[in-house]
Length: 173
Image (cartoon, rainbow, N blue to C red; front, side, top):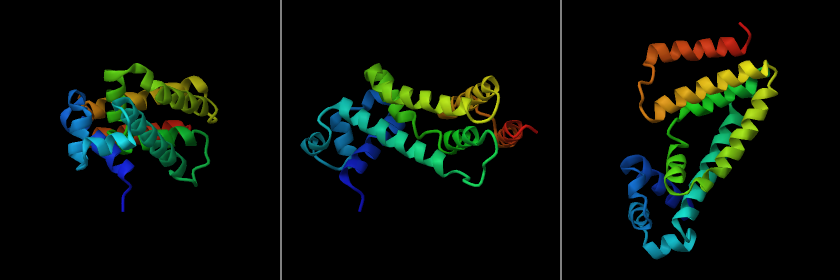
């Protein structure tokens, strides 16, 4: 059985992703999760605590995904390819937390900024030219951005070709 904390965090993400950040209230999340407002506040005493919980949970899952992707890939650029796959596998994963943090209190972005700094350092030390590796990371971030906001994301054939070329480039081919 799923823990109530997890259900509350998932309900928060659903409210944001389905209805928008303007609908992120304690009342709406409690209703979405099927709990009382008091029950929600027992686990997360404020909206900021709820957003922090979403960000922490998603970053943990995101990092875990990166660590578990193709453990047989030991070539230079391995971390960058894992970053790309985790980012593009489920582009909506980090969206709710980012939107909520930006809309309510930019200080809530600090854990995301810290993770990105850590990931950037790993990308720079991934065996590829650090400038080129950073360019590749920014390309992945741009593709992710176009996916989450539906800003003319490349369609299947072109997307597949982009990702195949990305893989080849990170392997020095």
